[in-house]
Amino acid sequence: MYTFRVTSLRILVILAFFLAAPSSAHAALIDLDALLDLNAFVDEVTNPFFPLKPGTTFFYEGTEDGVSQSNSFTVTFDTKQILGITTTVVHDRAFEEGELIEDTFDWFAQDAAGHVWYFGEDTTEFDPDTGLPISTAGSWEAGVDGAKAGIIMLANPQVGDMYQQERAAGVAEDQAEVLSLNESACLPFGCFNNLLLTKEVNPLDPGIADHKYYAGGVGFLFGDRVEGEGEEHTELVRVGAVPEPSSFLLLGSGLLGLAGSRRRRPRR
Image 1 (spheres, rainbow, N blue to C red):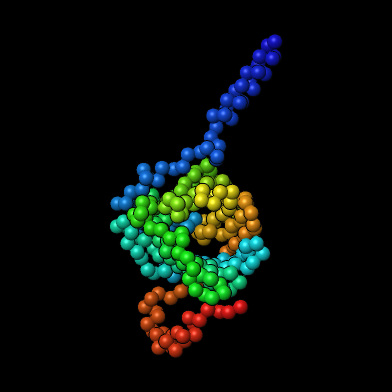
Image 2: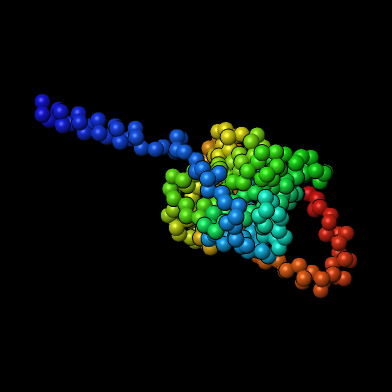
């Protein structure tokens, strides 16, 4: 009887531990309203997992359901004032088999603690066959129609952290959860250790989940669809630089002669 009692007690203790332990399905999101201080922002985005140095372009390639995809993510020298905060403008262009399908301007800013906030996006979807714009769905701006800034990258991410990346109800509601801080991977771009791994979901698109890997000093490295229909993979293939705006003035006369041809969208 004594052995039975001890064993039963251990089982109850173990059950109580697991019942009390938080699970990702029920873990609370970080309270971003309590975290956001509009009077505590800095000029540059230097978070090691999401650095935004103006003039840098990140080039990504991958596939979605077997179709070739590519992205260029350019940190511009432009800024945009939102809710009194000077945000960095990022120009993100998505291509499908070489054809432009989405053209987006994202707005990011970093607070004094190191959190990188996402203040919205101005996005346009294009018909790859005609090159004509067909939708601006998904566009939002903090402070407009009830939308609020989300966090794209925490200052000190810890396993189990859950946070809203977008807070525009019914329009953009992406969320992320930190799964690991010590992943490793080798890509053609390079080999990396101590990768940050997050799981991203969108309540507006239930059943879909992506894993994203971030490298310190680089940023987003690669991502995969892990739940839901379809297959998707994208990875960083190159990091380049663009000249400062003043440099374009020196090349102005030469560029004017090419302007017409450069605006033409490549055809299949």
